Image (cartoon, rainbow, N blue to C red):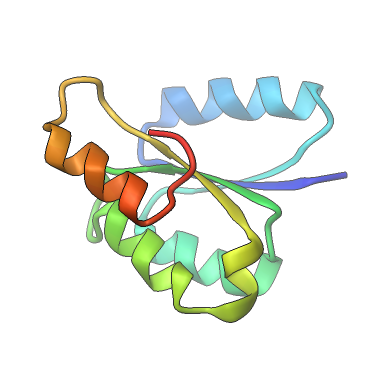
Length: 102
């Protein structure tokens, strides 16, 4: 079973994603903040990450940058969840950090 780490402070979004992903066979863990997500990544070793950009305490791109400095995490696929109203500079930075999908 593939492990998926969902990092978002949006509880409604998290419940929806979690239910749908678990039905599809994923083992899902949810973290509310970037700091929680970083800690969970180091102890749980997910195969895939869904990462929100707007997080309390630490921006999602900072989480992504921190994770890319850990050698084994480079193999973890990250998908960034962003609001369609964000500036193109943010989307470009997501792509630069190989966030997967913006």
